Length: 212
Length: 78
Image (cartoon, rainbow over all chains, first blue to last red; front, top):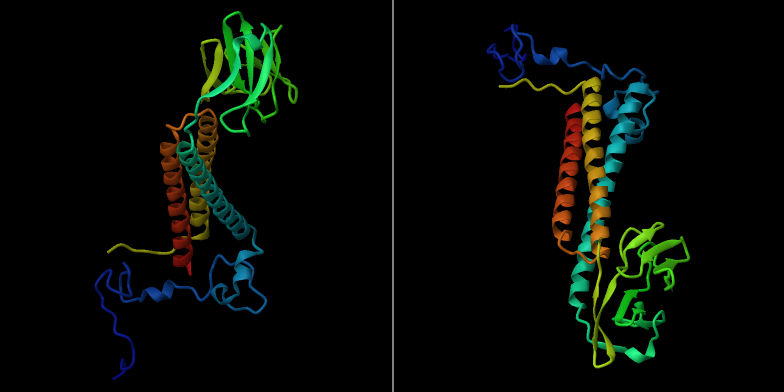
């Protein structure tokens, strides 16, 4: 037989090996021997698939080079996306740990007679690593805030005559009555210390961090 | 039966450009989420942390899915 040893094709459209072609031509006839988009041939003349990986990662042709650089930039962006997600979960973990250690007890700060109007006194609350400042702004008005500036944690200094707390690092200003930022880089108010004044004594009972 | 031919280089370039634009938008969204969440955390507001982490994770999964598709079209080319 003349056809003996040759592959017999199924003439039905879309049968295996024909993929939509008409007639009896096998689909492999359209399969080029080398990549037609490979403009520059490698020095050894072998097809691109047979080349080492580094050669496909550093193409010579401009269109291929542009494709590879966009592909690699996309990989880098996905890596950045992973880093942002890790950051989000790091914040969640810190928040969870903070919630576990948020129980603060009542601490006596001073007696009302210890502070004249316009005076200020520093103290640490709720831990020794949290510096705070207590001020008497009027006869019966006491306010206390965390001393850490909400910009970069420099210690704020009270200027009672002006009614502000000033951060000397970047000239940030906070309103003494509310702790809200007035000028400079800080955007969040100072954390307020909740005070309880009873029987001529001033107690710190909690910390109230705020976003606005 | 559908005809499946590997994408040409021009088609792949268009696809990767489109995916890259989408990924950049998602990464910018994640950056905004991270800064907003950090601001809320430092301000003592813990209510947004879990939803923001979930949204960021969803963005990452979308990005990873697009990257996986990119690897897929790279493989089918060979």
